[in-house]
Each structure stands twice: as structure tokens, then as C-alpha cells.
Image 1: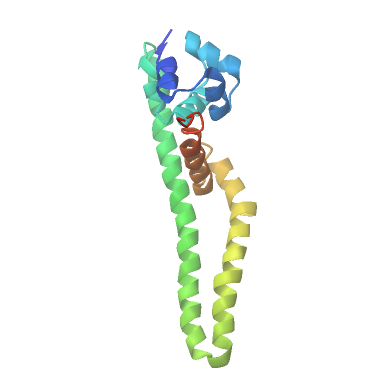
Image 2 (image 1 turned 45 degrees about the vertical axis):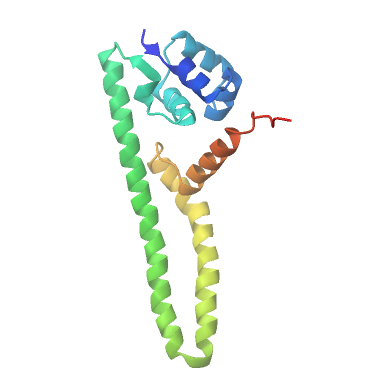
Length: 174
């Protein structure tokens, strides 16, 4: 059995088991089993670690099982690699959009009266099309190809949720 720090980390956040279960997306009974020292899948540990904002390795005071230690280290490396690959891919799309926009902006100055129409059509309509393509086509494929990574929108939503949720238990002093 590997000794976990989940109780300690949860209490540092001032969270109940129910709150950790909700934040991580796993069941309450799973949190209770983890805190009791039962084994769990790396995926479950990854969800709990993400909710607590720590690397998976930090969930343990020590990992006695050499195989589990290697798998945890491998998971962390794969997560970082997949996030970097996903960010490179989405960044390439963003720079493609900007590059085409710069060229069309320069062309719009040459076209005279139709220039402003081309300029506005690309920067507004092109952006809307890019967002639609990203959400409908690219994101599902990136989720499939890089399951350990998160989209910027998801990371931003989680960060916002965490920032708000840190203060929602605080009661104003009268």
C-alpha cells in the first residue's frame, strides 16, 4: 500500500470529500477509498491531482511500489508532452489565421473601395469560421489524439472555476 497525502491536500484547500469529488469528477466513494489508501487507476489519480492542482506524484508521501512509481513518472512525462504537442498544433492554426489576415490586410489597401469590405469580412467572418472549425472539428480530434491534454478554453474555465470556488465558502464578517 502506498501512503497518500490526499486528506492533507484536501484539507489545505478547506474542501470536504464531497467538494473534492465534484471538483475532480470522480465519485465520493472513490475519494473515500483513495483517502483510506486503496489503489486507483492512474486516470483517477490524475483527475484528483488536477483538482488539487498538484502533480500526481505529490499525492503520495512515498510510493513503495517501483512499478507504480515508474507509471506515475511516465504519466507526468506523457501529460507534459501531450500538452506541448496540442499547444503547438493550436498555435500553428492561430498563426496561419494571423498570417493570412496580414496578407489580406495588405491586399485590402491595394483594392481601393473593396478593401475595407475584404478587411472586415476576413477578420470578423474568418474568426467566426476559425472558432467553429476549432470547436466542431479540431478539438474532438485533439482530445482523441492527446487525451492527457486540455484545451486552452478548458484550462481557462477550470482556472476561473477554481478561483471562484476558493472564495465561495468564505462568509462575510458582519
